[in-house]
Each structure stands twice: as C-alpha cells, then as structure tokens.
Length: 360
Length: 187
Image 1 (cartoon, rainbow over the protein chains, first blue to last red):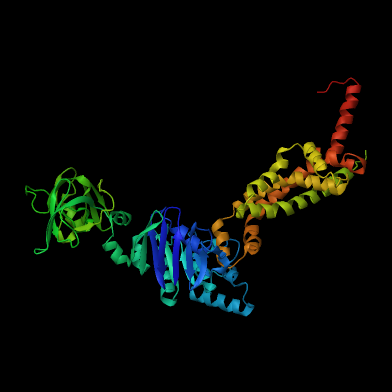
Image 2 (cartoon, one colour; image 1 turned 90 degrees about the horizontal axis):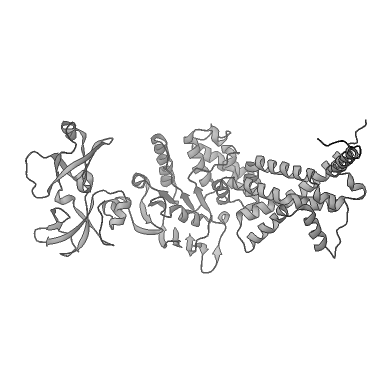
C-alpha cells in the first residue's frame, strides 16, 4: 500500500493505492511524471509525505528523504532506460549486486524464463526486438522484488502490436503479483484495459478518482469531461424539473431539450450538458420540422473513422454514426441541413465549477 | 645535425602529469556540480573556471602571492601544479558537458535499482561517456603541452627551461634575432 500526499508547484495531490494497477491519467503537463519521480526519490517535492508499507520514504516536515536505492520501487521509464552498454543478462544482474552469486543467477534464470528472454539474454538492448526490450525492462524492474512498481507513460508512441504486447506484460504483472502498480498514461483506453482505479490529474491536482468505467461515464465536472476528451459539452440552464414524470427541461444557447430528472439539481441551475457523440442520431433534413429534442444544424465536416463517421455540425455539435447510415448521403452531405436528435436518456449534466462561457 | 629530443620528452612527461592531476580534480568536481545543488556550488563553479579567464602570468603571480607563507618553489612539482590548475577549467567544462550528455533516465534507473552514486558513476556514467571524456582529456593534455606562459613563469630558469614551448620560443627568438642582426627582412 502506498500513501501519497504531495505538495506540487501547482497544488496538492493526495491518494493511496493498494495492489493492482492505478492509472494516473492526465494531459502532458498534468504532473504525472513529477509524482512518480517524487515517489522514486529522483526529485524532492516542495512538501508532503510518502509512505510505502508503513515505511516513510519522504516527509517534508521532519526532513526524511530516503535516497532512491533505499525506496524499493521498481521504475519503468518512458523510454525503457535499459543500460545500452550491458547485455540483457547483465541488465538483469544489475539490481542484484548485494545478493550471493547463486541467488543472483537463480533469479535471473527465473526472470529470463518468465518473460521469454532466453534468446535475447546475451545481446545488447539495441540488438533485441522492441517486444523483448519491453519485457526486459519490466523484468529488470521486478527482479529486485520491489514493494511498488512505477510505470511512466507505457503505451505512448507504441504501435498497435507492441501496445498489445505491453498490455499482456502488465496483465501478467497484475495477475501474478500483489504489487501496487502506479502507471501514468494519456490514453483512456489504457486505463480501461489495465487499471482497477484511475486518478484524473490536471495542473498538479486530482480532479476525480475511481474505477475507470465510473470516471469515464460520470465525469465529476466539465474540466474532467474535457480532460477525458468528451465532446458535446454545452452550457445550459435547467428551466424545469418534474420528478413525478422523471423529466426536465434544459435551455441551451439556441434550442431547448427535454431530459430526464436530474436529482440534486434545482430549477435555474447553470450546468454543462454532456452528450456522447455516439448517442446522437443524425439524418439529412427532408422537410421534417424540428420537434422535441430534434435540432436542425448545418453539417460542416464529415470525417471517416475506423468504424464510424464523425459529423461536425455548426454550434459545436458532434455526432458519430455508422458508416452504412452515412454512405447514402456522402455525395451531397456538405453544407446541408441535418436534423440531430438528442435522446433524453443520453443527456447528462455536469457540475459547473466556473461560469460556463464557451462551447467545446 | 643531431636533434635534441629532451624538451619534447620533458614536455610530454610534465603535460601528462599535469593532465592526470587536473583530471583527478575535474572529474569528481564535474560529477558533483552536475548532480548536486548545494550552497556555494555556483561560487565553486566560478572559482574553478577562473583560470580560464586569467592570463597565465597573472595566474602564477596570484598563486605566488597567495602562497606567500608557503613559497612556490620553482621546481617540477610547481610546474606540474600550475599547469594542472591552468588545464583544470577546460577539462571541467568538457567533462561536465560529457557527463550531462548521459541520459538521465538511465542514471535514474540505476539509482532506482539500488545503485549508489559511486556505482552509478562507475558502471553507468563512465562507460557511457568515455568517448567524450577521452576527448576532454586529450584537449586538456594539448593545452598543458603547448602552454607557454604559466610554465615559463614557474619553470623559466634552470634545467626546467627546456620545456618544449619555452625551448621553441627561445629558438624562435634566437633565429629572428640573428636574421635581424644580418639585416634580413622578415617575410
């Protein structure tokens, strides 16, 4: 169990993580690597306290600051950081210098087997395949039997095959050890794929935390939603609430929508409306008049995605529809009026920490 | 005509010793200044680099003045010492650049894997930076070898006068003087 309370240059971060993978999710300057480096002891934070399994690694108040070698943290760096002048075998031997010779060789042999590295053992890191390099990096981080594994930006810049290999390696670590793993990422898919818990970081503070599914389905506020890449965020005002009929009425800039009842909200509340692009329905306008939750909007751009077509309308509305639905209208889609339907069940409202001013 | 090789051997020997001495000071200092922040580290850096700016004669003058109680003997250890002090800033700057070029994530990986600073330096930084460090040593040696000013001031009399740069300048003066005396125009 790792308990972290860190003062950063922008704010304060406090969390704890037990066994399993905890993802630190955020944009490039969110402070993810700062947190990992502070835990590993590579930098000294302005203040706070870090406790790993009842051992204080850092305490700003009392001046405790253990050097990295005494923190027992495995660290997988962004660019793997295998020692380029040592063979894979010697890379694995490096953390075991203080162990008896027989024990060193037993552990190396075990790791070479566990991570299928026998063929690569005698080669230098640049002479092995990227997949073997990945496995060697994790094997080296684990061979010293750390109490915590820190992984910096694992899937960044990996091709799809390598990313699949990477997921496989981390699943192996997750399933075969009871090690807490802290992993930074900018990819929501990686959080879904691997993490049991995620922390949403922005500007050196935690916006939201919880299981990835919950965080992605229910962003705590508009900042969290933006960070998660959720499109279709509109400032709105709740003009009617009817708990009996389970309905509500929302006024947006140019139109009104009917939604479900939003518990805990009051009439007159200023909120952010959030709708997943995939839950909107869009069809070219064929004389039908806009009606309830049917909004007329001019199509500005249609872009092909692997499994769907993304339609961007005026007013910042984004919809994603199946390709077969779009194909009949592809030739004369531009600058045509379409009708976009906002299904009531798809509408969510988010907290409004600051005055809503811009569409996303 | 028989060539006298002794000035060359003398200079090689003294330049080698001065470079070794400068390297022993510059390498740990470069590591320290690159990896540690401590009160006075900027001052230490500035002081170590001072001989780079001072003319050699001025440097020796201040050394002699500074060591007033322990007079600087005009002997070979003094020549080596002065040459080492004169060479150190160049070595220090080049070694700092060489060590800074080593990927920090690799050094940090070593620290995270249980290595202390000495082990990180010996097994990671040194092997990864040896080419650039070798270049620094070579440049330092060249500087010590061709140095004229400091050596001339400290070792400019007695048997030590036959350092190659001093001998070369002496020979050049002799040659130019002779030509001038004969009324030949210097081309």
